[in-house]
Amino acid sequence: TMAVVGESGSGKTTLALAIARLIPVTTGKIRMGDVDLLGLQGESLRTHRRHMQFIFQDPYSSLNPRLRAKDIVREPLDRLSIGSVKSRNNRVQELFEQVGLRQDQLRLFPHQFSGGQRQRIGIARALALNPKLIVADEAVSALDMSMQAQILNLMKDLQRKFDLTYLFITHDLS
Image: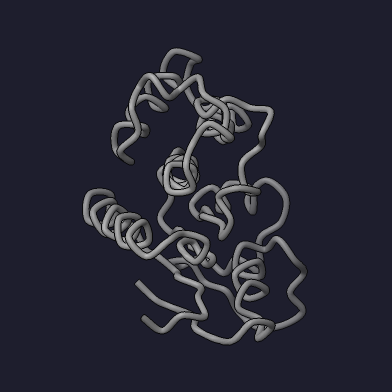
């Protein structure tokens, strides 16, 4: 686990977007294992990008309001055509359980969830592709203190279970 801590406007999110090659990088090196991500293009970049996923700051605006929760979590699997439709649906059900959501919530829309539950959907979506790195960009700052603790404990448990690396981006030293 690594944290990038700084004040608003200091470039923390820009750094994370550069790591994922979602914005242009002019110089330097970004390595994931033995691979220099700056040297990748096209399909090889796309292949490596699936090993890093984001959990965004605002669980209210980071989820598509027109999609049901199950479709939000399944979307990365659908886009990359991973597995059969049945195996994707099974994966989504497993992810819901792992992040503490119930099966009867699969068909709900984002507005039907609390902020903490929405963030759990975002975490499930980030886990869908079995990434090596998860960038948590102010992932708990929009939540109240008790929900922050619950989400951080969940992330810690998931880190142990799935051997994840986290890059936390935050302005809050605690």
